[in-house]
Length: 187
Image (tube, rainbow, N blue to C red; front, top):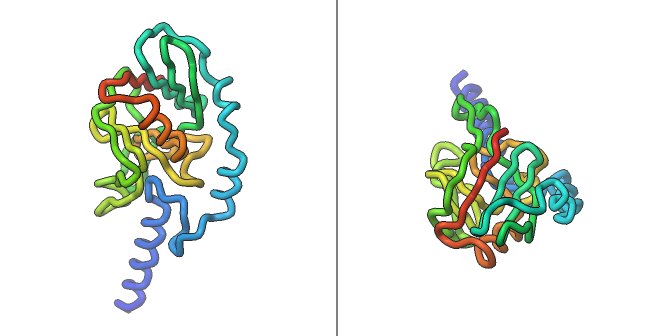
């Protein structure tokens, strides 16, 4: 009987680890799922320019995240210069038993990370999920790259704003500095 309980517990933990990894887009053997590959292949950054205003009332560099249209935009002198797909926080995270929406408001980037950024929390219990080019703006919430299958037209993260790795790298090295304004729109 205890062998059966142990097997069920291990299978449950394995399933949870795979499904709760905040950024991993691969299966346990390292292969991308068919859905992850097809969603990545159909990504068209030009579509996201149309989801956001072309101008905002700000002369400072600003990154706008709109969870309602699943898009981020980088603004220079009030003009939209680049936009892309953004996956914000979920209304409910079963693994932590509470809502985990990305906090709305105006923030500033507090730190700039490298391609090697990793979560210190997710997946539970020890963290380790890849978060390439992480840029924290609200405590443990940040903008970061995520792999195919985890950047989706929905709000499913633990609170961070996921974007394609190439987009996060562009923001990190071509746009953002410590202090760059981040505006997260209300859901």
